[in-house]
Image 1 (cartoon, rainbow, N blue to C red):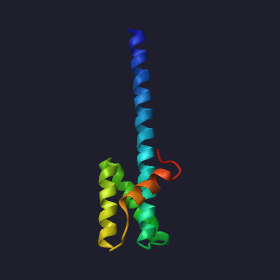
Image 2 (spheres, rainbow, N blue to C red):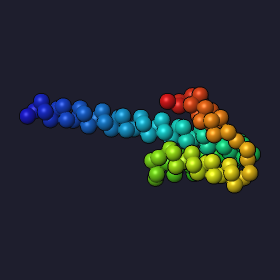
Image 3 (cartoon, one colour):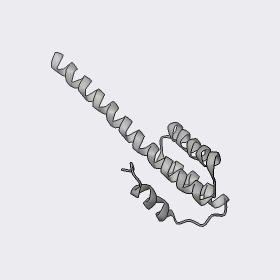
Length: 99
């Protein structure tokens, strides 16, 4: 039984590590996408920072990047900002830290 317990503990630690890395990657993508959108909307300084932090905080609650992308696109639409969805996704994927 000791071998099984050790394997289970090893698996649980790796699962926690994988989940943590997935979350970090997702939150980094939301951060980058939020900053990109804030720049498009002309947000500067604290307003830009607040917009990004609010979106990252939402990802903690929702844990779905697709919802955050939809929310950012809604913000861009409401601000009457022309943007290209593919441009936004490519920006996020090209940026450092995006997996």
